[in-house]
Amino acid sequence: MQSLTWRQRLSRLDVKLSPYLYISPFFLLFFVVGLFPLLYTAWVSLHDWHLIGGQGEMIGFANYVAVFDQPNFYRALRNTFSIFILSSVPQIIAAILIAYFLDTNLRAKTFWRMGVLLPYVVAPVAVSMIFSKIFADQSGAANALLAMFGADPIGWHADPFWAHVAIATMVNFRWTGYNALIFLAAMQAIPREVYEAAIVDGARRWRTFFSVTVPMLKPTIIFVVITSTIGGLQIFDEPRMFDTMGTGGADKQWLTLTMYIYELGWGAQKSFGRAAAVSWILFAIIVVIGAINFFITRRIASSGGKGDL
Amino acid sequence: MSRMSGPMAQQLVGKGAARAIHRRERQSFGVNKRPSWTTYAVLVAVLLVSIYPIYFTVLLASSDAATIARNPIPSLVPGPNFFDNVSRVLGSDIKFWTALANSTIVAVVTSVSVVFFATLAGFAFSKLRFRGRNGLLVFVIATMAVPTQLGVVPLFILMSELGWVGKLQAVIVPGMVTAFGVFWMTQYLRDALPFELIEAARVDGASMIRTFWSVALPAAKPAAAMLALFTFVGSWTNFFWPFIILGSANPTLPVALQLLQASYFKDYSLIMAGVVVATLPLIAVFVVAGRQLVAGIMQGAVKG
Image 1 (spheres, helix red, strand yellow):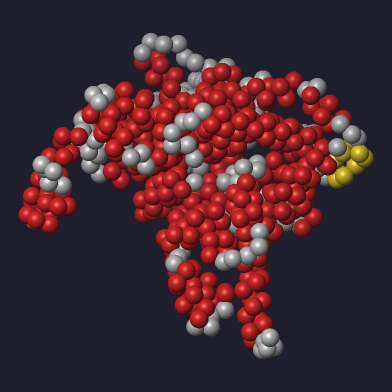
Image 2 (tube, rainbow over the protein chains, first blue to last red):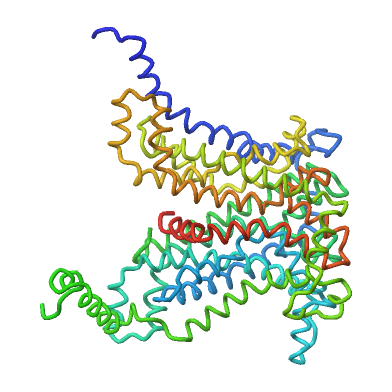
């Protein structure tokens, strides 16, 4: 083989190394600000670690024991799941229904689609400020509306359940339209012939919806459920801004796990060790739920549902 | 075949006939029929729900504290105090001008950076051959499911070590490239960038980076614009991390809103004026580019 000129050699090196160079920024950043901090959280959680004082002694699982001993932890756990269920289930149902109405031969299609997406550009912090006024216990629009129908006012802040409903409403306000567009795209990917066959068979509109549309949407529903689980269990902005104090209410009625992490680390205790312990617990919860999702998905997929990914 | 298909009619008897046949097909099959008024009624109701809270904000922002206290449900006509309230917010001891500038800087720099690095990686993943390519791409996709927000404690420690607490780079740098962006650009370039173009550039003696710059980047434009939009919105509305790391001296808009709520919680006209100031720029973006956002979500759903 003839020896290559330096220019050819350089060109070969260029071809060989460039791909790695181009993908390296993502990996570098992910390892430094994503993966490393997440794993290092486990290390911090085993130490007596103060916000200002810094790293102290290794204390084993004492932070976990301390956290499991605090009633606020269980309240945060309950609130997080309650808000998550109240925001994901109605949201997905509403999004599918809205998508179904959008998936018709509408006039001014883009107008309607943009209309449902509008809330997405309002920051969660702003959404929360708007809705905490609407859901104010004394002077809120929601209770005034109830009074017009002769109903008793609701303690939107005082009562844990209704506080969760109010916070879930904020999440639903911002995300329902977004998810409706995802479902709309999936509906449009359903071959028209399937519908036509159903119509020829004499199926009515709602029967077509339940026996054709919804089953064909299964992979998309799973996708939306998984993404909303990962985000929903880390909810912070909306409950943080639900009142002016930001501590989750007098009885911690709407304290969530991520708010609790903040409170432990940057609130009165300034205990990074305990904040890290709760982070790691929440991480474990998300992993477990992710695994459950995965197995259910596999089950559904292997049971032969059509249109699965 | 007893009936002419649309395209066939167009060939044989012209456009008018094709249209008529198309119309007949629509009616006979019901799938492409114009929807009934109930569909529009439902969608109008949905639209009212998505618009009213925003309009409610404008109503309160143009009112005054006493009127708001009297009327839990505001009258549908805006009050006269909007500009007055906005100037009070901008003149308050919360640094709203700083916040506006900070949010703009963070959103613009993050969007440009995400688009650049994601397109670079997407180019490599979709068009270049290298060892471990598929495995690495799967890894990138898998990282989207990692809740990195939970690494907040060590990230804070890291930023303290760097002396970045309270500084904008603490918010910008962690968001400079995202897994979603890499995945998005990879998917797009796979179809949109023909291998022939790359080969042509290579034959002309262009280096890899030159090929990227003159061939891949221009081809990536439509998807890059959408990615920039989503990154901009995400950055503008981001709260948790800026709230922890920035503090009141150097806030972004969501952080400024939190400060506003904490210090002026009795005067809703002022608070809602702040919400309008923080939200209006994105509404403006939405009016101009909302169409692209809609298209982006729908494309992402089909491919993702």
